[in-house]
Amino acid sequence: MNRFKSITLMTFFCGLSLCIIQCKHEFPNPNPGGNSSTPTQTSSCSADTVYFGSEILPIINSNCATSGCHDAITHKEGIILTDYTHIVNRVSPFNAESSSLYTVCVSGGERMPPKPMPALTQAQLSKLIIWINQGALNNNCTGGCDTTSFTYSGTVSVTINTYCKGCHNPASTGGGIDLSTYAAVKTAAGGRLMGSILHTLGFSAMPKGGNQLSECQVTQIEKWIQAGTPNN
View 1: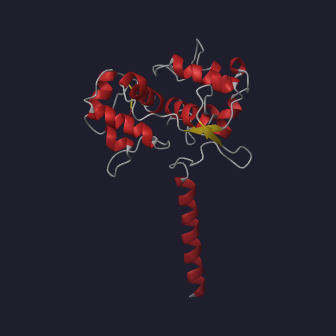
View 2 (view 1 turned 45 degrees about the vertical axis):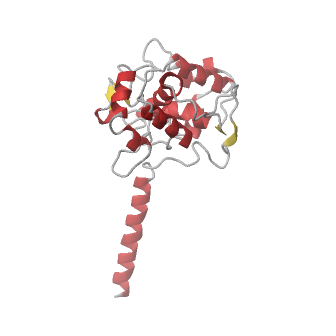
View 3 (view 1 turned 120 degrees about the horizontal axis):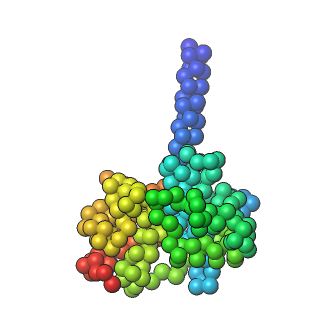
């Protein structure tokens, strides 16, 4: 009887361990890129600084660390780009031009994200350059988001392009949803967009595999929808 209990307990803990190993890829790191040797530095937002946690990681998550490419499960060509520790290995701090993370994005040959995926926008590339040339720090910031500003061009499209467009474009319509144009975002706004970004039960939580949008960003999108989704 004791032997049977021992075998049963061993089976239970082995199964539990396997579940933990399998599930650890399903949840975002609450401290993106952070570890004991490289703690995330959080400060008030400065217009002169580009922050890894709030600006660079979302761009990489949406455009590079996707299923089939450089997520933890696929790790195409042995490259993982899901967190700071892995991303900084592709960077030469203070020298964007020598950093493969940047050069591969502007390559005239096999650029990343690969075609037919859309290339990073000039605004996204500029953020990447500045972040690397500022030392490629594992930093983050609080504040800097204004809920009284909720135009499509100034706030909504910026958030969509940073966090969503990499997975929802004509070449990769995740869930059959395209968010690459104003018309497409307006259509989504009349459907499941708010439920997804609010992580409402029964909706596919977005951004996929990333942290939830900040309360301010959600409010901006919500106010834009309430205003009639203008193309402003």
